[in-house]
Length: 139
Image (cartoon, rainbow, N blue to C red; front, top):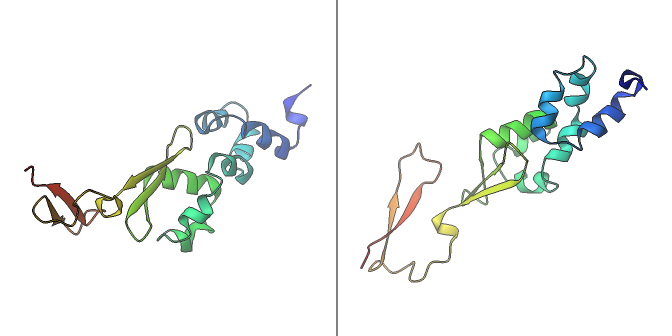
């Protein structure tokens, strides 16, 4: 059976069962694959199932629906997005689409965190994604 007789939707579904890396490579294998590989069907499977909920309160929320699923996948795997009022950043692992969170010190529950004797809150530069850092005074 020739793979070329399969409908694009079928090829997209098959490709979605691979990995993001394999899907990207498959676009080079056959002239029919690029349209299937670029399909939202493929990249929706690689995004976390709750990506919409996670990103809904981020700066990316307004443009999220205008991006293709492939563009969104690569955007959040290369550019972590601040969520939770800037207390966390969210990204996906480029290789497998798994969720990656970076939690700010403000979100952590640190013993004696509010005690200046033990801890120091320092403001960081305006260019930093995280605006404040927490430093132990090392007593």
